[in-house]
Amino acid sequence: MNIVDSSGWLEFFSGGANANKFEEPLSDVENLLVPSITIYEVFKVILREKNENSALKGIAAMKQGQVIDLSAEIAMSGAVISLYNKIPMADSIIWATAKKFDATVWTQDSDFKNMPKVKYFRK
Image (tube, rainbow, N blue to C red):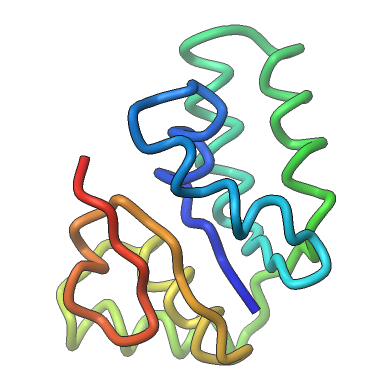
């Protein structure tokens, strides 16, 4: 199972320098988990930088994977992760989701850099 964090989705959608590094997990939709917090973050950024129609198209692509809603269990696990690893709320929720489903996180966010089961690509 794979999770592409918000930075990976945004890099892919924008065609950035690391976009091709996220093609593998994004093309394997049967094994792609999409934490609902990534939908929030990606929608917000695309809406701010482009428009609502572009943001909706991005979310439609994300919803091809299995969307994982924020449960009480994931929220509490994320809080513990955030507290002890000193990482932001969204990142801790993404990491908690990955732990619950034994998924690999694909990212270019340095908050994940030294964590296990992470494929980190420097920006």
